Amino acid sequence: EADIYQTPRYLVIGTGKKITLECSQTMGHDKMYWYQQDPGMELHLIHYSYGVNSTEKGDLSSESTVSRIRTEHFPLTLESARPSHTSQYLCASSEGHRLKAYFGPGTRLTVL
Amino acid sequence: AQKITQTQPGMFVQEKEAVTLDCTYDTSDPSYGLFWYKQPSSGEMIFLIYQGSYDQQNATEGRYSLNFQKARKSANLVISASQLGDSAMYFCAMREVQADKLIFGTGTRLQVFP
Image (tube, rainbow over all chains, first blue to last red; front, side):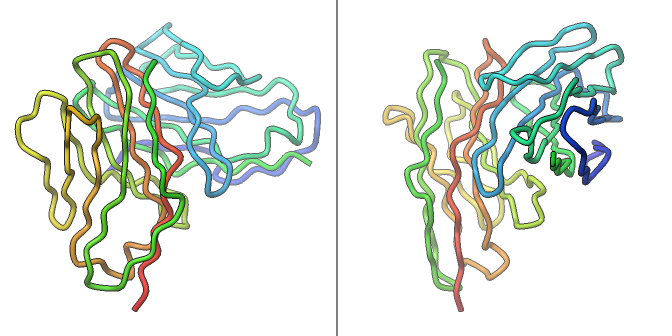
């Protein structure tokens, strides 16, 4: 049903590496979101975007950055990964406040 | 500031019984939407049901219904005739029209036993 994709699905990386988590959607949605979720825990909003060239920080402080150069693409970058960044990262998109958000499958990141 | 509270970390229900998962919220925006999502152990987020703040009737989607009590600021999810496949984490979420952020509660882990 949902045309929203995240790559990679799983990533194991060493401390200090720069990484980019990809998120793409083909539904033409203006609004996109990044959430961080530890296993079995709540989702924390870390970044969101209203459209091209719009990015906002979420409620949970994050060392990551995002960009929105194209409507369909909302990548998240960590300049220097640390073990504390180990988590699942979920990307979502939606069109309009009354409509549901579609979620990608998530990226499980492990930083050693 | 918008806030979602789910006070039940875990719930058990027997197969074929009904179960209610609690959700309360806080917002100063008169216009908002409330959502419930299911997250099985695979980690995907599955949309279940939506309720708008101006909707007069409670939302229903198959075995799912949302008990919306606006004055109490509660939006409880009712699952009728529970099935083993309903075992999962359930998250309540809210989006204000003004802020337009989609925020989630802490979740309730539901376990359905035979």
